[in-house]
Length: 357
Image (cartoon, rainbow, N blue to C red):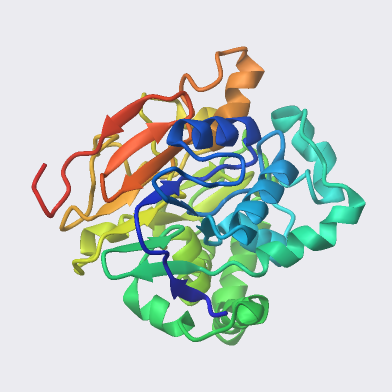
């Protein structure tokens, strides 16, 4: 199977980033009308936009459930950047459920969280390795973060088994630029003048121009990275995200998306109600600050982000707030273009290009 695959026919329930929130996922599936095996009385299919894992209390249960739904022919899923981290053995923030070296560092924010049983580790990796990057059919496309046609074309005929090796090859292009130009020297000079490192949130570095250039290169020269975590460019100021200071800004790629086929993504931490994004470590540019929470967006109003920030529900637990007040799990029903949330509420989306609503 290739990294770009066909999307199931019929009506779809497209589920946003789950991030280990097993109970929220079970509640959402119930409100959508799917039984424990994913069957729906109207024959609807489930589609997951990626980032099934990390941060939440029970990633192992989420992966096991989604795997079972896919095996039953009731669901499909694409890879998010968090699954790619897992496949690359890259122990990032919130992955203590799998990586031993993350357990202690993740305790303050995410505990308690279930760890995967030793006997299940290989099976989890094998399952994630079968997932594509993108799904498509004539009327709808699904990808975790970004649909740029040249990046899609670069991976379209690659088998899923080639992902890790190809990812590393493309990562190497940015490293080669760093080595063969004066970029490495400039990066070293910048960091030698900054003694606190880049993982201390309390110590904000100046804008490190060479590092910003390298970060943008690593992002944009790797099609797999663009599709799973978006378009980036050299930033204007440093920001703290994902446990470290960063220097490349996200770009609203949908403002240049010029194709007619609608695209559904996750990744971007949309929300129904205002939140302090810094509380959950999101201090980068807020691409949805000026976009209504239920509106389609982009140049032609045919892109929709269905990630409603359930990955921040750990913050509600830490503060003793009712779960789901700010951080929600949602599904976009297609072709109806309505949203269903894990608390059972529903909203009609607005601003879709085809009908001007």
